[in-house]
Length: 214
Image 1 (cartoon, helix red, strand yellow):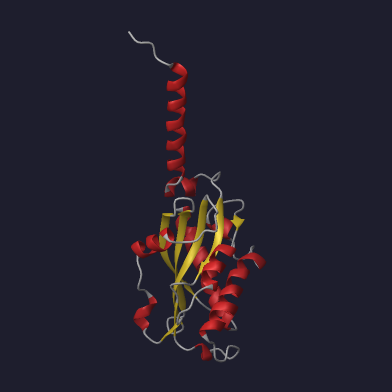
Image 2 (image 1 turned 180 degrees about the vertical axis):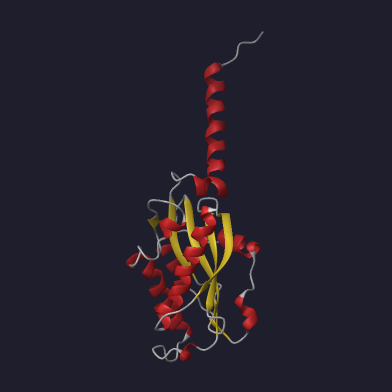
């Protein structure tokens, strides 16, 4: 009978166990239920956004160009999650005592956008699906960060419907794979262009928090 190399066997066994634990930690159930798994808030991504209607309906807005929307408002909405973190409470949404913040990831993606954000076609409110989100994540620049990231891919923003929609998405930043994504809408409201749509992000946080608890 051949002798078994116990140290080698033990090392191999531990290696398999560690890797199984890592894979398991990237599943939706474990990420949401295991509060020891750190989550990093990456911000609001507007690469898929269509604003349906006229921004001039807001007295404070006037005429908003694509550059204004990109440079002024996407930045302002992302900054709200930092400046008013108690109200826009990402940690509470994912049932954590705290989350890390790295909105530079989404802001970098937003800053290079060259597109027409505006539309008059109501059907532009929802045009993408889970496969599209997976493709976006696969090609995303996470700026060298690893671990579990969370971001909203904002899709439709409709003045007529008085709501905005976003794909709430958990990702493994190292492998660039989607752990979990869900489509949510949030009712808008408030005074001024920035605040009116900020209410949508707040309501999406609230609705997703309720779903995560279930």
